[in-house]
Length: 289
Image (cartoon, rainbow, N blue to C red; front, side, top):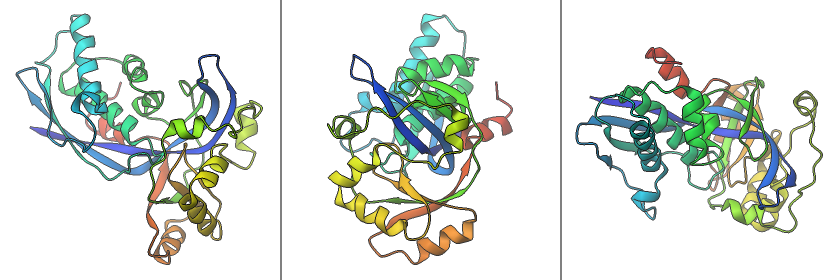
């Protein structure tokens, strides 16, 4: 039997760089919220112990694919801890709608969905704490998708505190370029000394993204798209880009702007949600921890 699982996008409602560790990693404060929109991953149990990716991604070797890495990491954990479960093999496939390099967390979300889905499919019985710890080995954003609740993140993004920002409607647009995260974090002009502030203060302060100025400077397409969106609503970059988003109080207002967008704008409208669609699906199937 094939099971289908949502793999939602996320937005960084704000993102501030507050310092840099000696190892080069940046310290940050950011607010994650999920979108009721994203990829769909299907999982099918295999009894031969193999992990098979039915939908390979062009240019990404299978061994580096985050879905495959997540499945194999879970396999290894269960074997190392002698966890009795069903034969741990699976065929994975994905219906991909989130752009790569877009700042929407697609790869991290895909990894988290595989961990959550196979934990159920293989009857591993692992807690979200354990799955989040495994996910952190794959990327700093994976734990927030595993835990499934909007969160305020600090450190390098791994220190999570549940949060409940207003659930607005968003027009999310992609400028047609992919922005490698190291390009933004490596720019000498990046602001790296924004003062760290309590969440209560940040929620009362107009949201901003310290990475936005660099993305706008280095990518004309981002500058062009944000300049257009800002005519209609508060708008900013998500993550290190490339996607940008504008916030609205109603779906109709967001769709009205999208409907009159120039032909070069590629976007969608989605609702911000504080409980991940992945965890809503898991709860409906009676497997929430």
